[in-house]
Image (cartoon, rainbow, N blue to C red):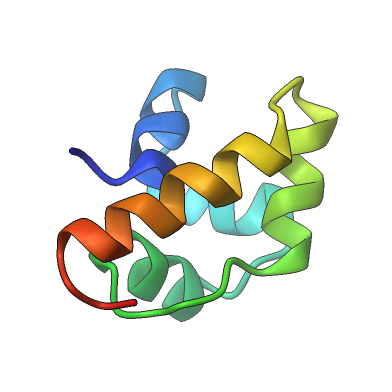
Length: 73
């Protein structure tokens, strides 16, 4: 399974710095989320996804499953 946060970013067509700026998420936090080394997704990032039509409940669930798969959770 690929990191769902990275997949959404690529689907939207943004670079990591662009998503960080648009969502108000610190670049370092976004980097850790995409690397799977950060357990929680920043609220500002979830709000940005919601505002762009994503089901944030599903995003969180998919990210949790991703972390379990790579043994971080």
